[in-house]
Amino acid sequence: MSDNHSDEHAGHHIIPLKLYIINACIITVLMFLTVFVAKGMELPGGVNGPALWIALAIAILKTACIMSIFMGVYWNTPLVRIFATGAWVWLLIFFAFTLSDVMSPRAGLGTANVEPLPGVQDYDHYMQGPGAEPIVYEKAEPKEGSAAH
Image 1 (cartoon, helix red, strand yellow):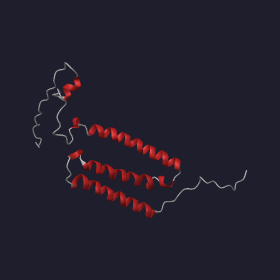
Image 2: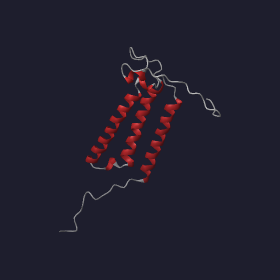
Image 3: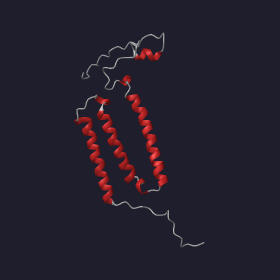
Image 4: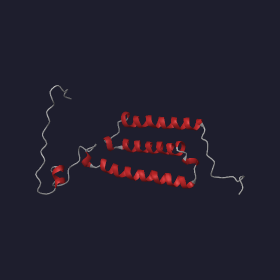
């Protein structure tokens, strides 16, 4: 057995500090852009309007920067790239299911003018099933000494 063989998989790509700093600056600018879109722009549609989709697009860009540079996926083998991309797509699938729930009219986010389903007066009563008594919510009175908003 020879001790002089070269192992092509033993190397590690050294990422220059300058590239880390540039990537961190890009992510920081994208973060401030996300805050500006969420707070500074008056876009129609409220929470579920274009601001949501712009913020999600910016989040995807930030994720790509983090995965490619900070995690080193850019310089890794194609197999690592495939698995990292697959994990990222799997996460997007989970987010898509969460967004479908949040954006439904039942969540009440930005959907004040949405009509209820035909024949459904009370959503909680609808969820209990036929023949159930309607749920009556009483307005809670503020406690003494607490500031009423």
